[in-house]
Length: 186
Length: 151
Image 1 (tube, chains in turn cyan, yellow):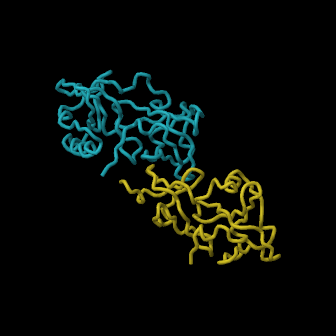
Image 2: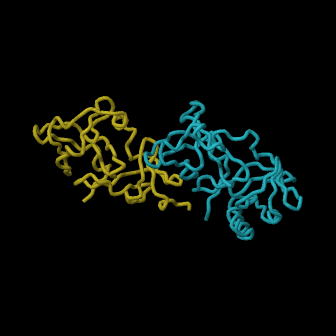
Image 3: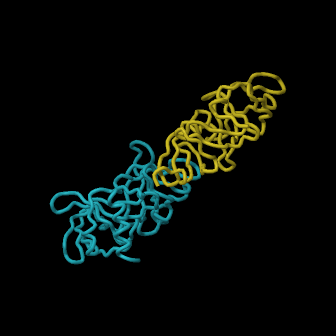
């Protein structure tokens, strides 16, 4: 059983070193570009109440795992200054926010708009689905293929995605496997 | 032969050469690389003192014997100062898996009084072998993911 959770749930989680058991920072926001299939990285706050932003960022390659209660890194050297980090993390494009984007199938049917990303627990930030607001005002989740076509403020997803719209994260966990099996290897 | 942290806290520490009682055990300083006890902490706060494990000559049921009165020293660095103020003890720390999920609180530590090796941690009522302990610090004890209940 895979554990999925929305990306918004990791805001404020501590960043903890595996080797030292120290909390070195906390999550400020996720850095993501559609098409990557995983988070590019995380921006950080200093640890503690009202301590403010930390300049360093955490690139996905330096994350051991993102879990329910903490983001795990090997040691404190995994945090890097924006200039040393990959450009997609250190200096992300300003127009990369997918929240609010329209989700269209290849057949031209709108499934709704993106509300949040859905992450797979225990990975370095693999994005396996989106939480969407459907046209009738409801809430749903859609699985994502490993590769995703992106076009401006619209995300184009495979036609069969509309058969996989589910209403909770537990069903999404199963839907992701079925969906990717049907899609074949990316 | 093993002892647990809770059995040992409060045990008196006696100098072998002078037969003086130097204090009582309040905490351990844990060596994450060797998975063993690096030193014993006596007392609390500013008056706390440290005895390196190599100066412990006998870990008995009624007293911890140390070589002489000079075995007691003041904390030498920040890590040791934190240990003296009780911030680094394993017991009471949250236990996290390397995948970032919380297992519960470290309730007790089982160790070998002969060589100071940590044998197991008791987390949320379950004894878990020390081989699964990857690191421990001021925030958490980090355990291998095999110990993870959710995946």
